[in-house]
Amino acid sequence: TGRLVVVGASLAGLRAVQSARRAGHEGPITLLGAERHLPYDRPPLSKAYLGTGGEPDFFVTAQELDELGVEVLLSTPAEALDPVRRVVAAGDDRIAYDAVVIATGAAPRRLPDLPELDGIVTLRTLDDAAAIRDRLGPDLDVVVVGAGFIGSEIASSASAVGGRVTLVEAAAVPLVRAVGEVVGAAVSTLHGRNGVRLVCDARIARVHAASGRVAAVELASGEVIPADLVVVGIGAAPATQWLAQSGAALHPADGGLVCDEYLETSLPDVYAAGDVTYWPNAVLDATMRLENWTNAAEQGGRAGANAVLPRPSRTPYETVPYFWSDWYDNRIQFVGGTAADGVDFAEGGPGTERFVALYRSGDRLVGAATLNEPRKIMKLRRLIGGRAGTGEAIALLASMARPAA
Ligand code: FAD
Image 1 (cartoon, helix red, strand yellow):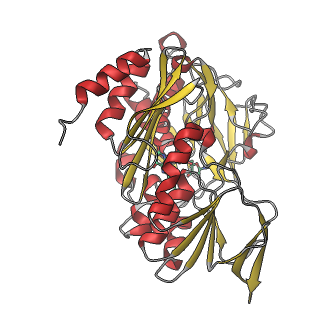
Image 2: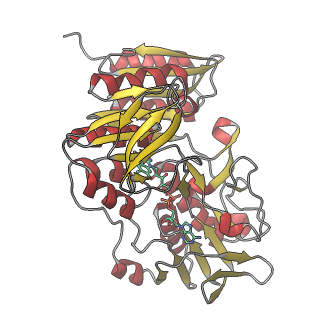
Image 3: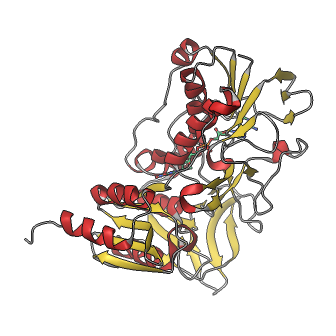
């Protein structure tokens, strides 16, 4: 019952403290957060919060955390971790730990050649979203750079409030890493169908400014797109710079924290969870880092428990990855992995209002993507977890087929 220090006061960090208590940890818990807010839900920031207004969704109140016996330090970024003295440093504080969970998430990547200019922004935090929402409105020219999930949601929300939106994507097909080429191309047709222009294979040559504010984006093709607001949504990198001197093993690709199946980093008693974490996921036989809500919640819970349990009582973490994204009143969902030999539309296809696409590796079902089929995706997730074949997926879909109209 020593001190548990959790770094990162968002979804994974919160689940870690809750689950440490549930696992019977009675010692002190300190939760450090760089932001000034208590933990809140991020997915709505690019959806309802931007588009139709509304309040942020906080997960807990200060009182609830107090009742859990959690000391919360907000606006307090951890600056270093010393695994020998076993302390986390933040400002003048040196917080001694017996176990740590690192849940510092990821921070938006910026385009290296874009100048710092008023009107060029990224979206990760509530404060970012509030600033964007203050600017959005009818007759605003908005350029969104990056047609990934968050960029596409921002495009959808900005057009819902009357903005003229252009999505600029560097790749020939958006979302290839996330869902593969077939489904990436299929869902990307939603933009044109909803009045948002998508320009692929596009490089930004420079931005034009007027009175210190962004005025237009110029593409390498020579096209100049007027822009009152430029939102850059080109992905996020794990927030681990503060661990540079700690000796923790960081992934060469992006600095994510490399963990074992128990979510323990290379430093003893230091665990990680959420967007920051690489770990070997046994269900898909692959080491991966996920950036989705469900993983952050589940992994946070597991890391919090493992950090405080006696070592033999710890359990490995595995999951069939799942995420959703909402564009123009459509729900896109994905389960499993994209490392497939082939992808087939089992129902619908590019351009239809609903579809189900199955990802196969040999005969095995390894992934599935749906558009507006929420009931089916969760059943497919269970099949993937049970290492089912594609035949079982087809039979399942047949059994769920709607009666012909
Ligand atoms: P984060 O939520 O990133 O939290 C990390 C926290 O740690 C932050 O508050 C950060 O300030 C803090 N921190 C960083 N460094 C330090 C430090 N040194 N010291 C202390 N604190 C630090 N997923 C889905 O599945 N579906 C969706 O529709 C969806 N929509 C999204 C929309 C948006 C706009 C965004 C940004 C994300 C969305 N996601 C979605 C992803 C999902 O929100 C993330 O996977 C999830 O928030 C990850 O949780 P986390 O706790 O690991 O990290």
